[in-house]
Structure formats: C-alpha cells, structure tokens
Length: 230
Image (cartoon, rainbow, N blue to C red):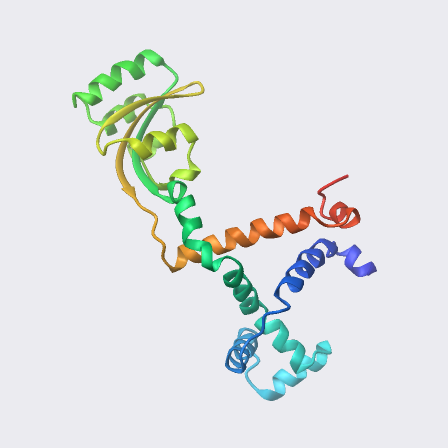
C-alpha cells in the first residue's frame, strides 16, 4: 500500500477495480484466449516459450494470470456490447444531430456595419467569400480563405451549429455570437453513419458515462482520492 500511495496509483486502482467487478461474469472462449495471449506476448517480443516463461518468472506471474491480463480488453468489449449494444442504434439517432459534420465558410468581425454591408455583397455575389475574408475577417479563418471543416456540429457554438443544420447549401446567413458578427455559408453536410468505427465510439461514450456514475457512488474516502470531494 505505501508504494501505491507514493506513486499515486490508488486512483487508478479504484478505476480498474470497478471495471473488474463489472466484467467478472464475462469469459472468453479457448480460441479467444489463445489469440489474446499470443498477441500479448507478441507485443512484448516474447516469441519463444523459454522467453515467455522467463518473463513470467521474473514478475511472479502464472500462465493463468497472463490469460486474465491478455483477455481483459476483450472482456471489457463483451461487457460493453452486452450492456449497450442492443440500444446503440437508438443512441446513435439521439446523438446524430451533433455527429453530423459540416464544411462551411466563415467571416467574422466585431464591426456590425461591415458585417451588414458584406452580407448584401456576398448575397448578391458582388464579391467572393474568400476575398471578403482576406480583407475583413478577424479570425484564423483568414488562413484558409474562410473555409472550415469538416467539423462535427456538436463541437461548434450551439448557435452556429443550429444555423448550419437548417441552412441551405450556398446561402449566406448572418449570425451574432457574443461580440462577433458572423457571416456563414454552408458548403456541405456530411451525415454521420452508423458504421463500425462510430459504433465503437458510441459504446465507449456509454461506458465512460457509466464509469462516471459508478465513481459518484463510491464511499467518501475513495472519492477523496479521486479528487471529487474535499
């Protein structure tokens, strides 16, 4: 225990103990275990039986302990799938408005009169958006001629995200955000897709939200270690 304290490992131990209790009911097949153990050794360049045995002996680890370590990531994935996999698509549909990505052009200025004048110029196509950005914009978008993205709508200011979600492609729209006056032109919307990479991301989101809830339910001493309460 003193070393756990000295090296600030108790918070990590608390996290991992919660996960271990959750995945305890989940097991792996013989084939899954064999593949996981092989990968475990391969990542450590322990390619021979002798080198594997020597390494285990050095750390006082049994073959069974190695199997537990090696299969832990897979058992975590099985826990995620069993807990949230059946409702993942509905969660995706709930999150989709924030996950859709936009490519858009942006000009921003703190001078309302300039924004007003440029809105009419750009709407009437009297000046190109890129040229107007170079001459008048006051943000980093000047480096790209105003073109930004693709970026998820959920990562944008809520007012800007809402505007982009309802804008017609190619139309110039004015928007006030704080002290800034924006001119925004939607170039393209890229809808989020319920594919493998997205599914893994959403499972991880659900897992992290679950873990955060578990941490809130810990006894006070554990929560103090995690810095959640004084």
